[in-house]
Length: 352
Image (cartoon, rainbow, N blue to C red):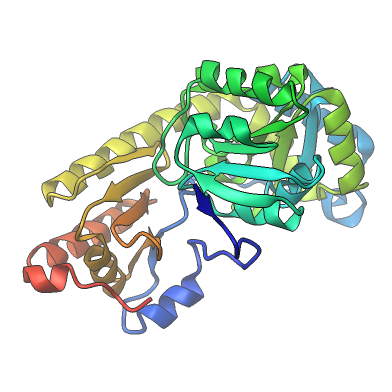
């Protein structure tokens, strides 16, 4: 068990091009940003109606979004859905559904869950053993996991939820990447039992992170509590428009899942050509864990290709997907340049 004493401190994430420029000031730009795990093939942009910007959102439109989200994600009904300006804002609110107690996060994983639980007053620890989560008041599982893509089976999660529910606890399952995961393992349809909150992110799969839209799926009372905390007009007009259209577009979603699977396979093959081992991932990112990872991060960054590194785990990298042929070519060229470097340089850790 890893106690997280400084969990309220700000967390470093991928996607900061300003930080990348400071770290690699002589790299060719623009950067090929593979550090975020966000779909590079975004849902098609469309012209928004003027009232999306000039008027406050209507309650009827929010209800429509909740109905469509419930259908898209498999929640029992719209009454089990709380919509928010991104899942990030939901994390401390969900953690605050319980009085401060013992929060356990199955890790290593997305660091914001521990930070949010600490903000809510919980004593937070990260555990590597799934069974240890039964000792928590608040247990958090990211499924599929970020950054390694690990998937916990639904039956095990439901058993854990029942054990927590029996003592007044709560299981939070972050399904931010379930759009490209094994959907049969989702707990979205089981939230009506109580003691479970499922988080779903809109921006990652639809490639529209800047829209800021996310959902908590829960029993009706919990969904109402979260709605009340967020207050009126929490979801902006443009986010409502994009959420309603994109979540209704089953054809685009099915075709995109196919395309992402092909792109992920292409990335596996490209990395394999240069003897870079892939240890896991999802349809939106690949997870690497090997001794030369820090040197690869430095070499790619110097070539203007940004991937996700983890300061506390220098042997680990996460690669997102290139968005076009030019980006694929730049990644291939950067890998080729790295591959011919002397071994001592290839393994050199950058100054982060």
